[in-house]
Amino acid sequence: MTAVEHDERQNARVDQPGESRGASVIVNVIDVLRCFSVERPVLGVTDIAAEVGLHKSSVSRILATLEQERIVERDDQTRKYRLGLALIAIAGPLLANLDVRQVAYPLLQELRDSTEESAILSIWDGSESVSVEQLPSARLVKHTSVLGSRYRTGLSASVQMFLAHQPTDTVRALIDAGKIQLPQVMAAEDYLPRLEAVRRRGYSINYGETSRDEVSVAAPVFDHRGDVVAAAMIAAPYYRVSSEELDQLCTQTVRTAKQISARMGYQPQD
Image 1 (spheres, rainbow, N blue to C red):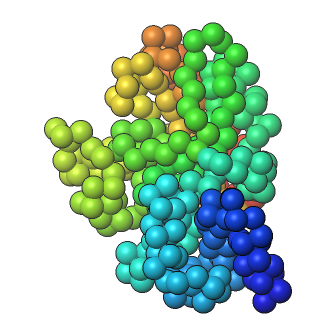
Image 2 (image 1 turned 135 degrees about the vertical axis):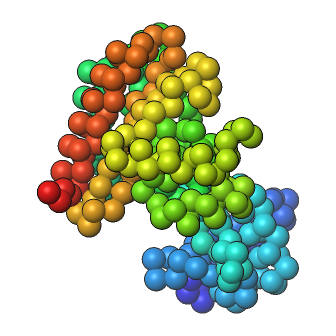
């Protein structure tokens, strides 16, 4: 923010006394968020306070509130902040700037139309799966969720898929820290072989395990570097998915994920 812009904002806070308090709080929050940039993605309280001209205690309160809402995230080691993926839930139009979403959209449409079930695209933010696109089924009864929904249940299809492509030590650390939730009867040692099976076969299944009413299948989307950048998914009501139909959903989901990966420049190794 330039000095002129800063002065103009300070003046804006006192031009209308009747609304100054509420307006200034909103302006302060916006100013704090605007401090983050591509060049400066991680900032501390002192950095932000100096840039926006607020006391560090005021900046700390703003950041604490934003952290509660997952608008910003704090690094446990540096105690500094970065923007959080919860912005996806309130900035839907900006999702068009995510290359994988643009590439995936028409293929997800085809997947939705061919299966007549809801097609979803999710990304991984380090400890949770976040839905960034959803094409609901045209059927009256369907499985849908709010765009930007986050999942950290270990038996969720998308969480299984992402964790299957993480190092074992990373998975253990997430489970030990309570960031990935497993059923009480399932230990990490029982869960890890499941992830290995998911990685080998190329898809994951949640067949009524997180909810008796839901079936979901997820397959990995790779970019040109061979990194998993998203999960292509199908979600359907449990009652209408037989074991034979589940096999078909798996086949169709994997095929769609491979098509998206190919358009992302992925070249599988023989």
